[in-house]
Image 1 (cartoon, helix red, strand yellow):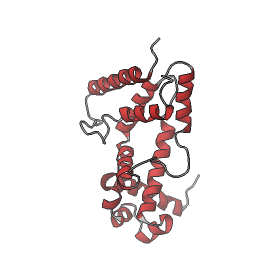
Image 2 (cartoon, one colour; image 1 turned 90 degrees about the vertical axis):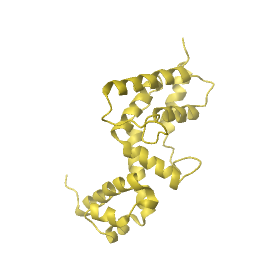
Image 3 (cartoon, one colour; image 1 turned 180 degrees about the vertical axis):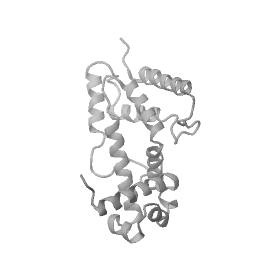
Length: 193
């Protein structure tokens, strides 16, 4: 399947903007750097995406969609889900950086996604299924459980206030963190049989 020239240009702009926004946020990103990195020009960029904020929204939507679909949540394995998120943040730190910038510059309070779609519906329902099956504490709201598990998985992400994990960290260090995360999530949300 061939890609039209316009689609290829849009792809280069999204890729260049992803790097720029992850490094500098919306306010610090420079349109001229994005255009140069994309081998495009500002006119094309504005023509495809409107302004800088609209371009950020397009970049963010793509990354979040990829993240939501990359790590499914089985209601019977919250600890495993948290560990998979840890690994995803490790291999795609730009997603955490983009989310942090979106929280700081676009959505300082409330739901991070204000696009009218329920991005977490399937994950919340999986947690409810785990609650109905007696695997997840039914006294907790499923949306709160999802938020807490996600936050716990980010303990060593680029948004961490203490230690940010990197791909070059020793394997045993990642193993220790994964196990600590697995145990903490299990203890926090599981109903012990």
